[in-house]
Amino acid sequence: MASVLVVDDDEEICKGIEAVLKRAGHEVRTANDGGVALDLMDQEEADVTICDIMMPDVDGFEFFRKLKLTHPSVKFIAISGYSLNGSMNFLAMAEAMGAVKVFEKPVDPKVLVAAVSEFG
Image (cartoon, rainbow, N blue to C red; front, side, top):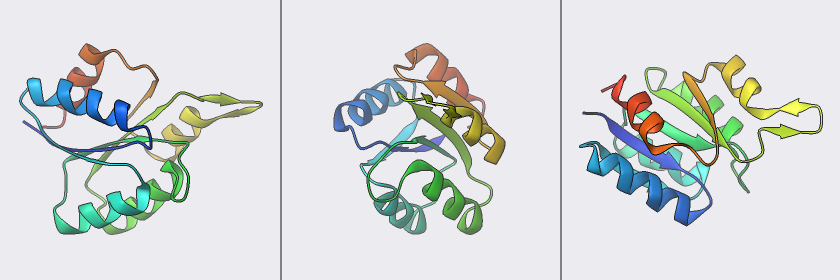
């Protein structure tokens, strides 16, 4: 089973993803900000991060850039409720940066469990 860090500024989304993944046997921690998530990763590296793109302070893109520098082996799954913002496709941008999977919110729990299970 995988060790997972879920990063989303919406606490309900964090709790929902955490519950689904724990039921599937994964170890899960959560953070509501990219900066907090980086601190948690420095304390104990996860196998997989599931991160929202649009967050205040440290957004998903900044989190991912820093994560790649400090923890390059960690898999990054991007999620977003705002995948298209005008001409910018945030999930396509995350994929181009190296995200292993991208999902629009709300994410189907079965699909998310299957994606995480590939990495642990």
